Length: 66
Image 1 (cartoon, rainbow, N blue to C red):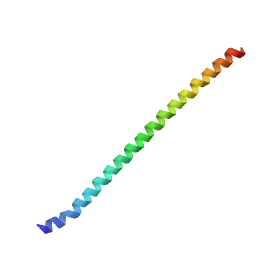
Image 2 (cartoon, helix red, strand yellow):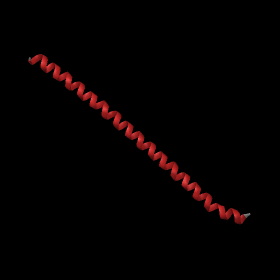
Image 3 (cartoon, rainbow, N blue to C red):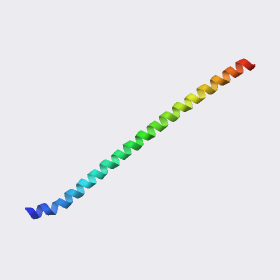
Image 4 (cartoon, rainbow, N blue to C red):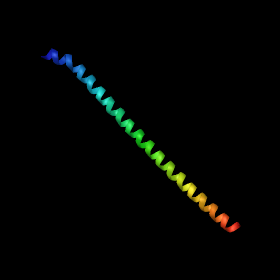
């Protein structure tokens, strides 16, 4: 019985380490997706903001000088 336990203990530890590694990989992937999402969200937000003010400025420039 003790021999069987000693035989399967390294296997169980290896399995546990593998599970832990997969969990860490999943967390890293989620973190990367989170950063990716926020990067694109802010990128498009500032892009929209920039063009909005650009056309606003252009409109007033056209209005006052022509």
